Image (cartoon, rainbow, N blue to C red):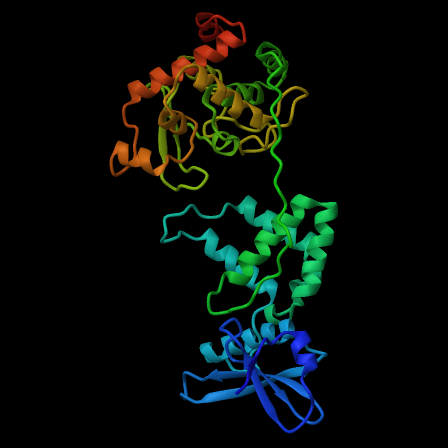
Length: 383
């Protein structure tokens, strides 16, 4: 069987005549064949059926209506069905069905030890599809036009670059979820470069503190301040219950972190402990209770000078000034430790010494209070 470069240009040059078969020169398109007769040029897939041990020849479509790339996508779908023993008439799941399978898998306890998907994230995934992929959501995976979706993604990127990036990642994850379904997912030509918000470090810390102190709601105001003194992520901090806080020991335990199901106990600074004392007795369960219903407070709103996420960076600045070791910084603010740090701390990668944690936390809080022009003793007493 002659071998040529099976691209559209070379196939177009082939002359009609008695039946002649061509395959691709190289291993990029295994099993893809071109049959040229007196009247037509037709794409075929040559594939061995593992159930029968025989090689099957499957018609894919005619050139030029079916281009090489279209034929190869169809060939991979057919090959996947043969490998899986799937009947040709049995449809692949729709995108929405596959999305729900993906969410169910990510939401369950995972043998890999990775943290399950949060309900909020699952809701964001479904919203992304509803807003930007509804046209293809009810179609079987193998019936989704990849070029059409890619054009849609590129157009979306021009208007909403971050939404396009989220769609690119999510669609790819759903297509690749079932390793037996070997389909190429739609993708952006160029992924969106995610721009990080720049923190304005020229704003005096005393001005930021004055803005936070002006918040009327005690719970919300205290949540802002505790986040500044701990560097914690907002979602894990807001979800704390009084079972997670031990004021006698001066510790708080996060049941889970961003990408880790293992709980982490962290020692508080004296200033942080004094802030928690403000909230005692407000609610029997939640440390940061909402005034509307029996749940914790919702996401913190942005202030004029400060976003909630800024406080984590400001805490990091203070930790750097205090000379806190990197592994201790990551432990105190709820980041995952690096591999070398885990090895240094032993198999379980725990910073069990609460006294050393507290010493480091106090040093960071001292820097924050001094930058805010508040005496440390006064801060603890007032709180």
